[in-house]
Length: 187
Length: 187
Image (tube, rainbow over all chains, first blue to last red; front, side, top):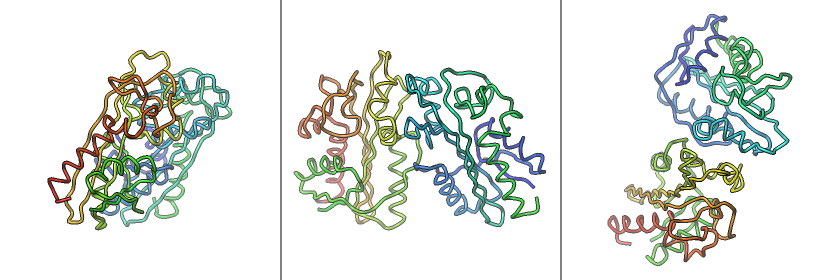
């Protein structure tokens, strides 16, 4: 089975491939896009995208939206994480978190898919953790260098894909997606 | 002439009324909404909203989108100013700007309108200024307490509506809108 991933992010493509190839699902980047709305949750963003894609007859595509939600910042940067990463970066988040002792945060990932027959799959998973006090590591992408998952002392950027995927929000979401997909179709 | 303003913000309603009533345009809040997309510019957000409203046959409505763009933060918070105000507030911006000497910023306002006959008006205006080092004043709303317009030493929140409207991004945009409206219809 082949699915087209709507993304411009190489890191995401690698993570999807790494998880789905073992299930015999081939993932290739597809030159497609959809409108992302301003919303409170990443699920709303994905649902609107799916509606947009479906109305244009696009099928056999997957897309995801992820966000870093920091408790003491009212969930900021949340749905706007990629914009905030581009403008403020990890340094901006560390500056905002300066002198704040409650460093709890989670990464959420929502995956949406429209199959060729119009069936939809939407799954969301998250990983709890905390914001570090400095950037560490050079793997991964986005806010990985400042996020330390629960039960670990390393940031996501200090882990290999193989180390990160079993616990990451996206890894979990991709596996939940694969399970849901199996129920719908014979992969 | 009557126009319905799509907003949940009392402050905006007051500013629109204050400028448009003198032209004989009555502004009332209207219970309507449209999808706001994630975009680089407020014009894109407004254009998409207008398309959405038009496709549903909504007319004689105005809406606006405003943003605070800070030079040294790559334009942050920009299109997402109201989300950032709700989560980080003025204090968050001041924290991000701590020890940054380049404090230049501008407020932009884009107004979009669909007339009853389907004609559209879109205007954008801005006001240059700088980010203060503390919150001052209790008038206005949003980031007004930390924005000092060029040529002044007071923040927007230290000015009355009558003092702020002649120089503010929204005041300018409302007047540009009124001019454009006059060319289209007999008000």
